[in-house]
Image (cartoon, rainbow, N blue to C red):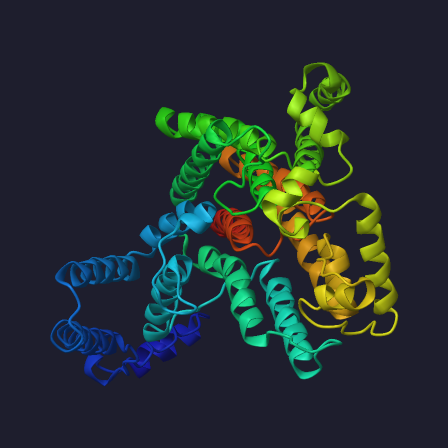
Length: 496
């Protein structure tokens, strides 16, 4: 061997490097703790069996209730090992709002349970296998900062209650948690969806959820008295209108992607678009109608300049073709006396007059001058208006509420998040290499525009059903960007 190396050096050839020293397989370290998952599953099964025995023999629970619990546990286990199933369940359940079953356990509801399944199926297997939990996206950090700002605002009001006292911190903590649920689903989606096919199927499930909600809303419109405004499945006329306006534009943007999906899925999304558009107008929410018009303007402008001009012409002729109930609602400036009597406090269900709204905004902005950095605290504006004008009002604007309750910290976090969402939509529209990606980007931008406008007239952003749907789609957008960039990097590596 030494003579051969010497001969190579004489011939002007460098000797080959020695082979790496590889220890035997038995000496290699092992870091997988997958076995712990089976141990935990066995312990959980024993605990559940003991709990069911206690329910039957100690607490006398009926057999049918125990069977329902077992069915629920089976669904939970399936969703844990098949998180893709839970993703479909989440996006279908989101718009159904008050129609979802309750558990009877304080703070635990249908969306809570679904989210727990999603988080568990995402986090635990990755920890046990030493896999990375998060991928880097444009929205992830701004969203985390915004959630932190919300809880900081709640803590600030808890520590320093508003004038008059009586701040229900525990109740508002539960309400804030339900709102944050809709935001947290983004992290699950963006870190668990594995391919483009799943994105297409999840978009169809989004359409199914919208169809179920719209059918219930249409039924209410048909069977409710003519003078009543339908509240839909979200429990509020304005929230329902904002949800449908956002979804209608998201589905309309996906029209350019329909060539890549099956006929049945295509028909599902066509139906969802039509019903969501109808659902935008049935609650007679002026904010939702204006949001839909502005979002559709963005959609047509991004698609074609000719389509944008045609849209402007149709909009200009709307006094001729628009239904009478829409024209009457857009012309209203004050709450109808009969509606106020039916719904009780008109601030719960209906918009106050424009004059009252401007007065509320003036009071909030005046108070903001005294506490500009961190604001008055989460959900303190009703206490402020009660102290100033003798009646509780909400801010009727996400942006005014944020700057008044969370100050410059909160409004900066919100602005960062909203700008990041818009930039993600534009990133995907530039980088998409297929029709699904371009349609998803276009629909997301249209839905974002509608949501931005709707929140100028109300506080729709933190409604669990709206936020849960919007950030579900935001997760799909950022995940699709990840697919596109991964494919580009792989293609570049092959070429080099």
